[in-house]
Amino acid sequence: MNDLAHYAQQTAANAQAASRALSIATGEQKIAWLHRTAELIRANFELLQAENERDLQKAPEYGLASAAIDRLRITDARLSGICDALEEVALLPDPVGEVIGSNPRPNGLLVTQVRVPLGVVFFIFESRPNVTVDAAALCVKSGNAVILRGGKEAFYSNQALHGLIKSALGETGLPEHAVQLVSTTDREAVGHFLGLDEFIDVTIPRGGKSLIERVANEATMPVIKHYDGICHVFIDKAADLQMARQIAVNSKCQRPGVCNAMETLLIHADVANQFWPEIAADLKAEGVELRCCDRSRQLTPDATAVTEEDYRTEYLELILSVRIVDDLAAAIAHINEYGSRHTDAIVTNDLSASTSFTGSIDSAAVHVNASTRFNDGGEYGLGAEIGISTDKFHARGPCGLRELTSYKYVVHGSGQIK
Image 1 (cartoon, one colour):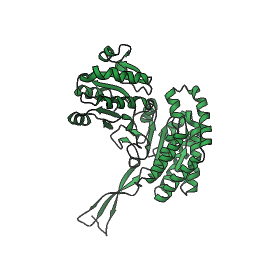
Image 2: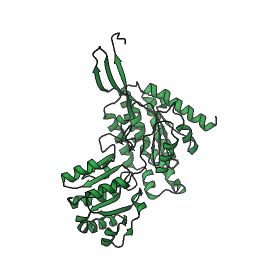
Image 3: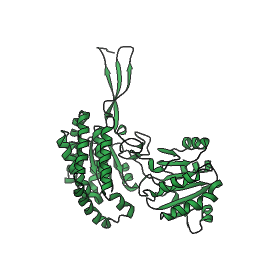
Image 4: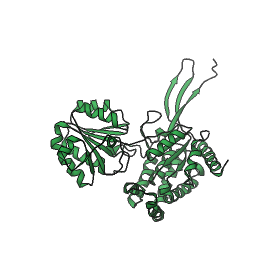
């Protein structure tokens, strides 16, 4: 066994041992750890930003685009947001031990279905240091040990955050290996972890499509994932057009480098002549490059012609595909053909249209008269999320505390035999 393989196996074995201790930790201990971690982060803004600056200085070596650098950057506001998220998770009900159902049988057996942790989570992610803390918070609160494998671009930021997380674990009596950070950036290490299904119960990748495809292909344990965030907003003929302008601009521009940002705007032909020139001007003012179908280019001739490949592309930057469609059915057909089942929205005041849209779009989240940017664990009231899944098993949409649990049957009898 080489050094990397041995390191991966030892780390995973430590996590498994920690998960067994963590599964019976009290809710009070976990809450104390969340609050203490927030306190330590608030007390160390200067240290964390200094380590983050080391990562930012190296970002050009990795060829990071401006959106990726933005995801990497730690600011006072983002650090405060991290602490707020920790405290929100602390307030959420502890899912471990929840009785999902209870069924007394005619023979006197009492059959209960009880929520339990998954066990050990191997979490692979890129760029955003806040994800380090979100993942740790959700896993520990739900009774799971987690092995964190961040990208090389956030190496120093993640090391600093993990140091504070580990200190808080020790101070609150939780196992020190409940949250571990992979100490090497060697890509080969990931392959070793993905083969350790005897220790690791689930892998969650969060990053680019190539990373997620690699994990899905190599993992010997279940994977919770989404590949792309090709999100759509459809402006129906019955839309409030002022509302539609605000939703479209927010969906694309508020933070273009994230998976729930709009990548394609669809417009009903009946309102296109009125709506498209106005929203096009709004988007251009935000620096958005427009890639338009033939019908929309007639109204904005300076736009680039859209291609078939554009409709299948998650840009993660200020680029937008645009298509004018004849009706609601055409919009639904486009989304089901080109979408990634992540987040899609309709803007309409027609109840029949919204009902048809929400029933026909097979995505993890379907919004009516709201920005795609709301597909987020915090915005949905989950406190935080470890990722967004477009799968249908075992979790779908933002993955919070409940999605990090399974269940088992506990049966109480009084000597029954069969």
